[in-house]
Length: 313
Ligand SMILES: [Zn+2]
Image 1 (cartoon, protein in one colour):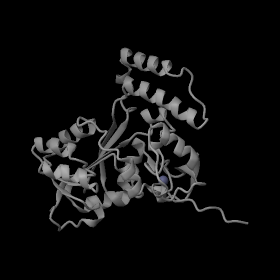
Image 2 (spheres, rainbow, N blue to C red):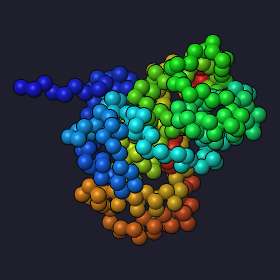
Image 3 (cartoon, protein in one colour):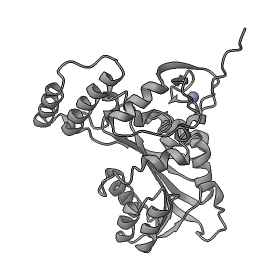
Image 4 (cartoon, rainbow, N blue to C red):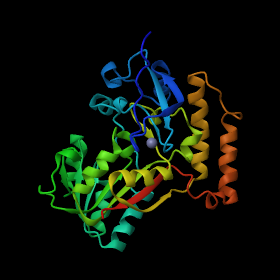
């Protein structure tokens, strides 16, 4: 008899037991990516073989949802994805983090995965000294050309005594859902912080907008390897030896409901899964009713992202 395939332990709490929640085959993932306009070569699929089933699991102990960390995207995948910067410069986590930095008197900030420096531009305008980490050479060069100090290195390659000196604030905007071991990443970041320094993280919310689009391939490996709830930040803080000082969620907007509802039906149709009734018109109507009725004030944490601040003791 063949042994059962080994299942990964929970990346957040190390609990050994988890249950499968959902799964997609490699051909289904390929179909879904085609709907959103991408086609990847074999090397970009990495550990996801042609006959693989990609399984989303939920930890029995802490409830965190994750995929096998070995499926995280490789360099070829991200090069082909070329998702330059789809983030608007006024993302809520940017402004919110800078408000927090000003309140707490944080001066030296490093943005991990800084891209061309959209957040660092705002941070400098707010009077902060700006550093970034960025592995994409073109993006890093753009940020440097604007005067930010950008290194093309991984976090674990930095040492506290290196050029950066110790930092007051390290930001991870839409990063942790891509990494195989978020606890290790936060510990590495904490090593670079002064005592009292803060880590600001924002991740897509598994409890809000993305529930409308469970087949969005961006939420599956090789792109994302975990799904995040507000409750997961508490476990992340405990496991990383950091103090969770604040967490919350973005607002859900009517335009999100409309966009998510329409996208879901296109994605579901491509893999033969159930569509929601109403095709294009119902998401449009739902979005309009939501907008006009002021319901965005009632569902404050159901938007695209959730965020948390962690303090180094
Ligand atoms: Zn767990």
